[in-house]
Image 1: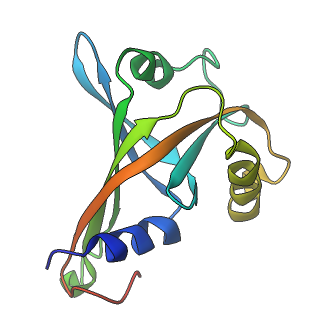
Image 2: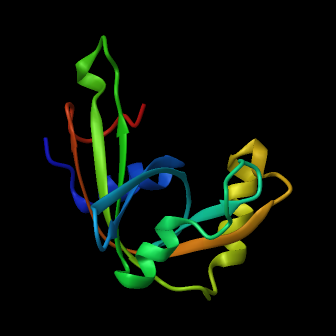
Length: 144
């Protein structure tokens, strides 16, 4: 069953990780698993100093500078009970480097992810949630 936008947003707000799609000019869609937090219709994903990476300047940031559109897919899979399956797709617009929501998003990330308790963020990518759609095997209700 299709979810209403309110139901899709509720599931998006209840989750904290998904797969972010940005657009690379040469090869097309780049998909990256991310952790995120929301503050109303703003979503933030940290560029952290916890995980090893070759640079704090990530490809997704370079992609967003070229095309500020992104999509986040959040889903729940149960291999035994397919009545629990659901997904939400959020259409996002990158807000750039400066956002008044950064502090609130940083605090929410620190509260929801143990590895982020000390807020080890190089930066936080912030997005406006433009639209949320979704599907659930059972329609409204359960987010588990």
